[in-house]
Each structure stands twice: as structure tokens, then as C-alpha cells.
Length: 114
Image (cartoon, rainbow, N blue to C red):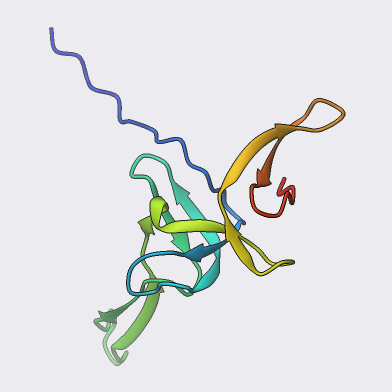
């Protein structure tokens, strides 16, 4: 009896809505907001980063074709959480607040993200 293998869900250090800086590749040093997160492939979609152009054929008669630009996912290991207050990228650590909540904190600045 063959069992279906479950896809691996990678533990990600970033969440949707975080501001991140790209640290490697063609778009290095760009800063943008995370639009979507894909834990199964360990990829993230960042606004204004890894922009691809797509040529779209006309669907109906009389309609003209067009060129559409859209962001493509990049690996989550190529981004670092970015502090907009201090303008610096940093790794994150997990800590607890006084009321016992587990929160994410930037290691360089001590700023709490959540």
C-alpha cells in the first residue's frame, strides 16, 4: 500500500505585510512589502521586486493584445526584515512580552514587529 507523501511546509521568518529588503540577486538592496507567502516552496512575493513582463494575446475579436508586468516569487532566504524607523535590515528573534505574548523582534535594533 503506497502512501501519499505530504508536501513539506517550511518555517518562514517573514509574514504577509512585512517590509523586507532583498539581500541577494538582481534586485539586491530593493525594499518592498510582502504581498503573498508560499510556505510549501519557501518563496515570497515582494512588491516591486523580480518584475516579469508577460505578453497577453487578445481574447476577443477586435481587442488588442497587451504587455502586462507582474511580480514573480523569490526565495525567502534572499530577504531580510527591514526596519522603516531605523532604515536597517536585520535578522529576527523571538521573545516574550510582559503579558506573556510571543513576539518577533529585530536583533539589531530591538524593535518589536508584531
